[in-house]
Image (cartoon, rainbow, N blue to C red; front, side, top):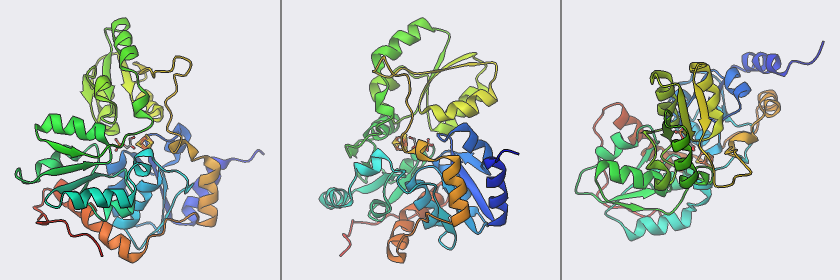
Length: 323
Ligand code: 13P
Ligand code: SF4
């Protein structure tokens, strides 16, 4: 009988009392084995609420760090500790600290795609699915510093009609979409609904009928009776879209490079079934944060969770740099 790695993962998951969380950008076979599949906010909530002994997060490391911060007594694992994110890389702690220090009156609104160190010097965390609600809870007279994703920040600033001080980071995957080629594609497929993630450049977003988080885009495909969609986000989510709408044509938005239609996130795609099996078997690699860092980063994540539950929060008067 041939070796069945999927059955082995399910067996190990049970044996180790583990829960498997997967982001929409993972390969379909990983999504199908997961206990919960979702966007980064959904995964943070599922991780926080989990009663399992072990939480294995098939996504990127900042997602697993957020779960560790929100549910610190659990063993939090990732299939590959190298699964980073260009937004994390483009917001080094020392530079972000300098930026914050230059704007002491500002409220630092930081995208969850950031390191734990950067979260620890932020006032509140947002994801693309809750950012509007969170920024709307900040008093109108307080300046907003938004980082690290300038495209999401620019989009929100326009939507909320509020000026932001923007950090100059971007997602290396979403900036690859070509506005010119998307415009040509919309002419060719005038019956298609264009849906895009707000990490795309504004030149691409101008052609989108719907802009939203991965879960919002999936919801649109599920509920919109249109039969054709052009999707400007990572291809992993096509798996759920095709499941929800087998009758619809799901087309990938074009990148600038005509020789490559692929827009995969190299970090999300580092995760494989074999790495998941090994992580469950060896209970490693584990996400480990010092208590000091975890507790400081928890403040900004807790504010996000409180606002999304409709609770009132207080904001610091001024930024005090950690000594
Ligand atoms: P979502 O929160 O929309 O899932 O986005 C996460 C991400 O990394 C997009 O590139
Ligand atoms: Fe980071 Fe972009 Fe990959 Fe999302 S798609 S994890 S923002 S590099």
